[in-house]
Every structure is written in structure tokens, then in C-alpha cells.
Amino acid sequence: MNVSKFIIEKLNLAIEREGQASLVVSGGTSPISIYEELSKADISWSKVFLTLVDDRLVEPNHEDSNQNLLYKHLIKNKAKVIKFFPLDDKVRFNKDFKKPFDITLLGMGEDGHFASLFPNMINLPEAFSLKATPKVLKTDALGSPLHPRITMNLSMIMESSFIILLVKGKLKQDILDKANMNSDYPIHYLIKNRNKKILIKKIND
Image (cartoon, rainbow, N blue to C red; front, side):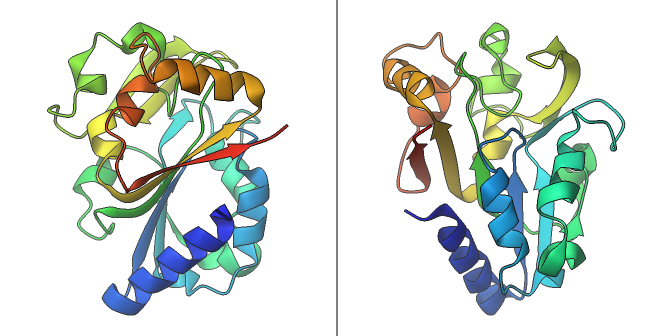
């Protein structure tokens, strides 16, 4: 699966059918080449809504900000007219932001976390239960780089027509394999609900 082509196809199809589309994306290094490709794609970007699945609670122009990463690699070229909404709880209640999300693009950390849903949050029903109200959560300082974070919970992430999980490198791919049967990894709670709308793309180093 060519991820960029898949996203372009689904966004164009949503615009054709519904007059608008929505895209939810993550930070990290894995999707950067995809963002660069998308920024040059022929899409009616002014009809596309964009937000982040998670971010660090830092200034938008901070080097560790996912928002900053998007402006460097996606919100430019043909995509500079995209309708970007910084992640906060208003996204959930914003009637203008198209839902369900057409595409959500996720990465995975070496501890099995995705979005900013980390191992120490597994016992929090509001984070990982599909029965929880879809919402945006704030966390303590977690991960690397170490910052307080904001993140969609799993039930909000699952409100997506398609979810693409990028798993880059053998270490992460081995973790993904272990997580199929091991509930100590956050990613377990995503892939155990795997169906035709959750697509896993393995990327070699």
C-alpha cells in the first residue's frame, strides 16, 4: 500500500461525495515523507479539515511541537490552504469539522504507545475503553521529548473511516507482533479492534 496515494484517493473521494473531507495526523519522523508528498498533491485542500491526534503542550513554534512539524512539512505548497484546527476539545464539538474523520494516520513508539496513550495510562478507562466518551485528554509529562501532552482517547480515534498505523523499523515491528497477545502494550488496544478500517503499514529502516 502506498500511503500517500491511499490518503489522496480517500480525501478526493470524500470531497466528491460530501463536498469536504477530514484528516487527522500524528507527529514523529515516520510520516514526514508522506506529508511532503501530500503537500504537493492535487486535492481541493480548501475543502479538507486537518487536526492532530496528539501534541506536546508547548508553544506552536517550539521545535517539539507537532503543529510546528505540520507547518514545516504539510501545510505548504498546494496544501497551504488546508483548514487546520489545533487539537483541543473544541475539535470534538466543532460542527464544521467533518466527522467521522475520513483518515487518521498514526505512528507507534518503541514502548508500544500510539498518539500520546502510554503504558502508564492503560488502566485509565477514559483513555483506552471503547465505551468511554470520545474526548481529548491532557497528560503529565510523558515520552521523549518529555513534555505534558494532549491526545485523543482511543474511542475518539476510532471515530474514523480509515486508520493507518505506520510501524517503522524491525524493533517496532517486533513490538507490534508481541502486542497482538500482550495487553501491557498500548497498541494492543488498537489492533485488537482491527477490522477492515485499520490498515498497518510496515516501513523498513
